[in-house]
Image (cartoon, rainbow, N blue to C red; front, side, top):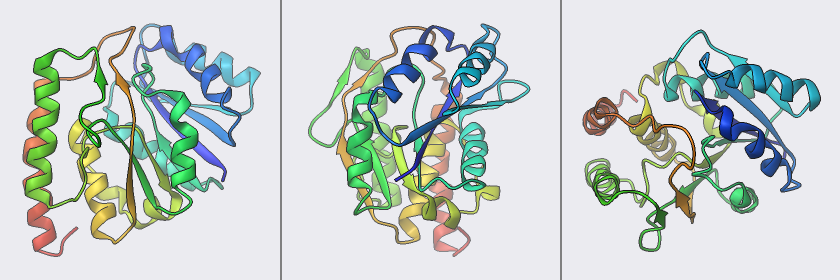
Length: 237
C-alpha cells in the first residue's frame, strides 16, 4: 500500500534529517511530504536539499506560519492529487516514533482510519510535565463525552487514513487547528461511517526545538466539540 507521510515543519532543522532517515529505514512503501511554513532556522532549505538527493522526499513551501490544521489540509490535497492509497499525519519532533509506521499500515488492511493512542492502555506518555498530561487527558475525556465518539485519544496527531476517508471529507469546510483539527477530522470520519481503529503508541515529548502548544489552541478545541455536536444535530457536517 503506497503511503505518503505528511510532516508539517516550523523550525525543525535539528530533527528533520534524522527523522527522514529513520522513516525510510523502516523499509516501507512510503514517501514524505514536508510542509514547511517558512521556518526561520532554514528547515525549508534543508528539506529542499534532501528532496534533491531522494525522489521519495517532497517539499511544500508556505509563506509563513499558517497553522497545523491548514498544513495538513494542504498536504491532504497534494496527496489526493496523486496515487497514494494511504496518508499519514506525523510530527517532526520524534514524539511520534517511526518504528510504529508498519503497525499503522497493517491495521489499515481492515480499518479506514488508524489512530495512534496515548491512552488506549493506561497512559503511554514520556517526559511531559504533570500539568500538560492532565490537560491532554482531560481534554480527551471532555471531547469524548460531548461528541460521543468511542475513541480514547481524539487529540493525537499520529494517524493514518485510507485515501477514501479524505476524499469523503469536505476539506473546504475544515477550519480548525491544533487539538481542534484532530478532533474535527476524526469526528467527520466517524460520522461518515468509516471504520476507526486505535493502536497503542509511546509518545515521547520533543527532544529538540520548542513546543507549539498555546492557550489559544486549547480554547479552540474546547469550543470545537460543541460546534461539531451542533452541526451534526443540524445535519450540516
